[in-house]
Length: 192
Image (cartoon, rainbow, N blue to C red; front, side, top):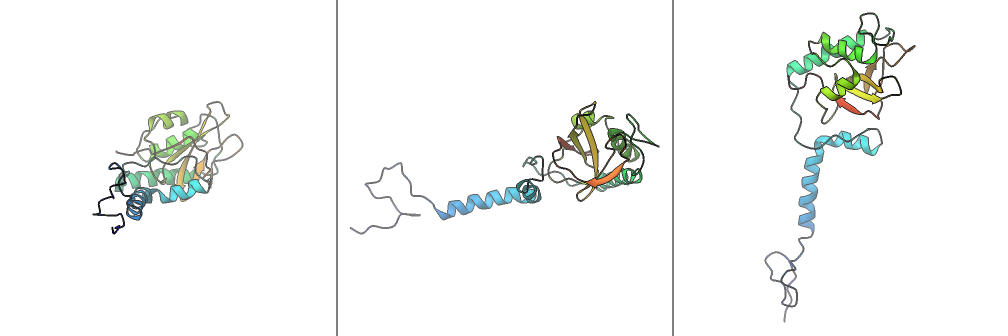
């Protein structure tokens, strides 16, 4: 009796259980890897940051975020430009400008200058604005946990790896490198 190798189109020998099917081997593995790579491709930068320990959380993989419209980009650019001009101004608790700011007063005023109304406090911004899915963009807000009176701090993303913040008493509004460990990232004006 001649034994044929198991594979596509071959019947298993009678001594094998009828419930056992031949393994597909490399083809199935290739299909699964291709599907996973396709799903992960839009999140490659975030995945690299997670592996390097630089991200606080991995964004959800789901329906791709809608592309920003020209209006979204223009509003975000106005908010970022406003925040950049405020660098060097003093921090003052509950200040909304124009001479001093607290953290959420800065982000609130920046987005207000762009014609977008957002909640006034960092906690309100985290709770009331759409979460960022995918990579950060200029204008996004990063909310951090703090030991201050409200327990929250917020900064505005101004470009690749940079943010502007009003950190606290004695520290003027400044541009600094993005820090990991944020509680959430939100996007004012999304979907307008």
